[in-house]
Length: 151
Length: 151
DNA sequence: TATTGTTATACTCTATAACTATA
DNA sequence: TATAGTTATAGAGTATAACAATA
Image (tube, each protein chain N blue to C red):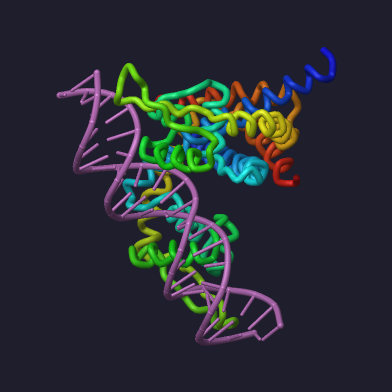
């Protein structure tokens, strides 16, 4: 095969990969959202709550960096979680510009109950691959993602 | 390893897979969006235009099925593409409930020019994997996606 | 009755800018 | 001056449901 044909093959393959990747994640996301919706939370709210639950209290700014949201959006999400009494704001005594988001008792109890179920659900959603296949895919996805990010 | 530990491993691995998949696609999407943005189109508009460009005129309803959008969203997207003179609506004479979306001369000329560049860009974005690795990943993603979809 | 497409409406998220309080 | 966070505002994009026209 000459260079030009090889180039076209690789273009088609890359396009295919992009489409299949998008479709697969859409299917998975849909199931994961169903799993979360019954808690009265949307995926962003769940992601923020889960971050605080597993990593402990976080400055508002840091949350935005980790779940990839603009700071005004985080204010909005934290407002909603605060209204639901799942987390609260706590001023930082050392730097009074900073506000921490802290999980509440109710938030902890909710996550204690639902997080194990959530992990179980994701395991079932991802059961199309076995353990070894998952390990390979994780590594390959990292390679793919790092390259794209580094462009 | 006993069953319970194996279960926990598989849960963690699945969660990891979900996170890595999400992150990788985010990085790729970001690059692809950059590639499209300079055309004055967003990814959805580009997807609809590309569908009509490569598959020919389509009933509005069919477009929604293929790009996975609700019919009201398609109305919105087609409105925008029509305002940009990239496609137009054409009534179906045989079934007057149906409206086709048809690509215009300007739409065809635009795609003739940018679609080859777009494929080349995606090839570069996906260059973190070689041809064989891409083939494997496409197959694995299909398995993963089909399983999730079938739940 | 069922289907196609539109309209009306609401929600989530983003971006921007102005602002307060603090460093 | 710079940073953390909030407020206000506007806009993109999507989903839902109700609707009109047609089959």
